[in-house]
Length: 370
Image: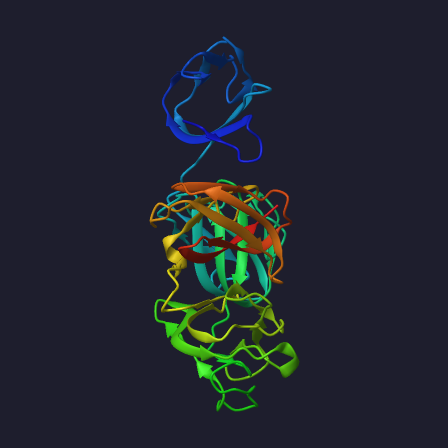
């Protein structure tokens, strides 16, 4: 069965393996049938011809209102690498990327890059070379311009089907602490660590920090109340926001105005997302981001949210935040194994998707490339 577009009930799509032969589109258990003689694209009509399909793996798009269809072949590469003057190998070789187990068109790699230019290539073949001319995100095309890279430590993601790519700079901290008048020490810290409550770093994820049984006091903003997160016992990098008990902190954001109580604290230093969870009364779990899959990521229009690895019931609130912490869209959807979110109205860039219901909260980063 094809998947209906969340924003247009006439648009349907599917990724599927096909063999040489004929195909048609049907609806209502075969009561309606569309076909045409053209391949890979044409305009189908009711009771039209069978479409002469050539064997391959395709993303098939069909508009039930206009009849327009396209079969876009999905080429699965044995390898995809990044190369150019921004890499340690120059243009003589490439550095292999890791293929996603969930989507063979998605590739990623963490590496140090130099000031210079970069391209992607498939199967070690310079003739299969993608470039985009934009940084840190864009949509690469075969034979496209080199990507102008600024030196740094990056997680690079590339989709060999859509051409979408992102370079996300990695910043790792030695320490993350919770500070503030409403925190355990009852006052804001100075330049030392005497009033910092340090969180524990997740050994499997250097951006995930937690601590338990933290006592907070409800001091008002007028009384200099609230808490914040800060990195490496300094104010150079700090996160705050107005929301409590969950939210997305931003650099130099406002104090988090908490309520009094004892909480488990969860913080993501890559996204700024935080949660204060009452260990005695709250049934909400802060899920590991690895349990949720987003694809394609980067995306150009639609993002699929794979919830099959977690047990959820009822509805979830899907909220998208930009890097300033501003909510830019929000939708409520019934739980399904895979949800779809149309983000084509958002600008290119990096975003945080927060998935929330009465049981769980989880945040996932994704990128839009146009």
